[in-house]
Length: 469
Image (tube, rainbow, N blue to C red; front, side, top):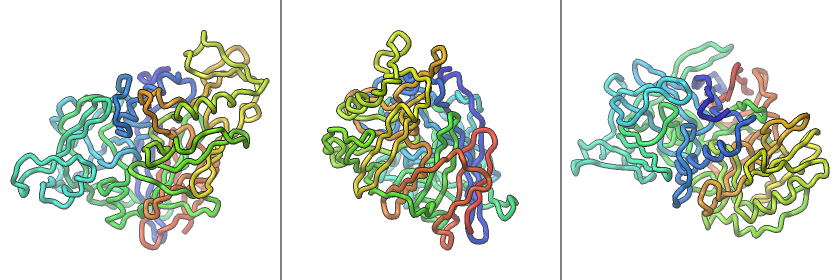
């Protein structure tokens, strides 16, 4: 099945408050499953994704994909009276936006088989346009997206014009309006809360869109996490735990999961970059020059759940694939069945017994363990054998040979990740994210000052996860 043939279920954003610790719950849906989707389709998705992030300043090969807006999406209500919109959750963006009435180039229906809802600021009693003299417009200068159309800053609308590496572009103006946060108090009793946030009203689109807009969780001041922090709604921290099961899902938490087993390493801007110092396969260090990952050279690994696969520099990729399938019980699959550049194997036994464990070593002594399912993708069957292909790719597959390492969704499965933007660090630990259910309990920091919240990433039935009070 190709990504263009996939459909997905619309889900809902819920933010909750309680007496001591509040459950802010966002339900997310995974757009593209991993099982059986050809690697070529996933690479095409990631090419457009990296272009939209703008993480490299070189042309990106390949056409934009309608699923390039990310892997997870959710729904929330804006305005008064409230109206529901579907958003991509994006840790690689800083500017949130929604398509607006009279948008030029915007489709009326997305590839997700859901209608595109157009936001109309004139229909909301709580909407206000941001002028060039507004402090929020000054903040927009961080992203380089600010556009003022006249010399009169008191009356000119604060606009934006964003162009991504694949040629996709959006333009419009900033507005402030109410984001409605359905709340859960006590035994799933629903109430209502709200927060006034700044986002873009997109009037022109060139390229593809699969949702009504983007909900940005980047590091700059106009990102949603930064705005909610400044409003006292959330600490400047968020966490996620993505399931390793084929359909995806998991949790996404506004706040920090407090767990003594978390390993931490410094975060480096402008994206969620890390200082990688070495890689070992089954305990044997690969002969890699650590300067290849220097963040000063803009090559430090980026953690991005919106990218499906993981991408390594050629020197690292070649060393990795040379030892990944060395077990005598693993048989390489011929190129008559897969693309020549894909590294695929036939196996009749558990991959945990046949393939090695990979360990990534980061600054500060933090180690991240990758099990075979963090780098292998099930691609089908040949007789009684299972076809597994390496889901870690060379960066030249998406960035024309000028690479930056990206740790994508596949590598992040079955781990709790904590993005601490107050201390600029990333933490993680092994966790069976598929075991999460309505009785799962987490200790969340910040309850005395903020409404810490949980976002559940579900597929069919989503249980609200209770927090320790």
